[in-house]
Length: 108
Ligand code: FES
Image (cartoon, rainbow, N blue to C red; front, side, top):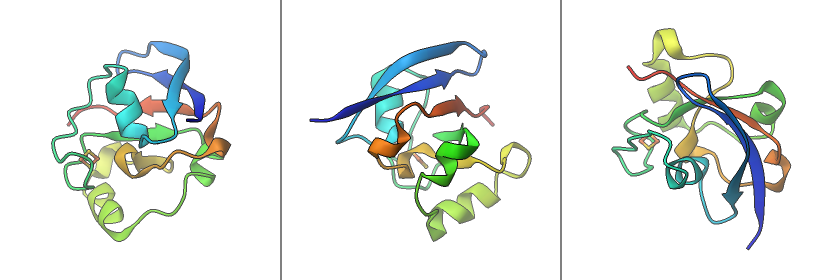
């Protein structure tokens, strides 16, 4: 099994480097395994938006396509949606995302 590491900034602004992300996990699954307070109420189906996170711009560009369901949900977030917003349950592991910086979006 492969694994990469990312930097995570939590809702209090605490920054942790070297957070491992295993190849069988979505980004949301890696974050919840590390006990970040993401509810993931929908279980990773792009329908709750509690896993909303921001990526650094370079990683965002490498994070794959935003699907229609994700786009619709991000659209409803208005204020908290940024240019690099993703639903972390829809971000698949990729070697290219090694070193990404992930900021957990505010709760709404
Ligand atoms: S876990 Fe519900 S949208 Fe990602």
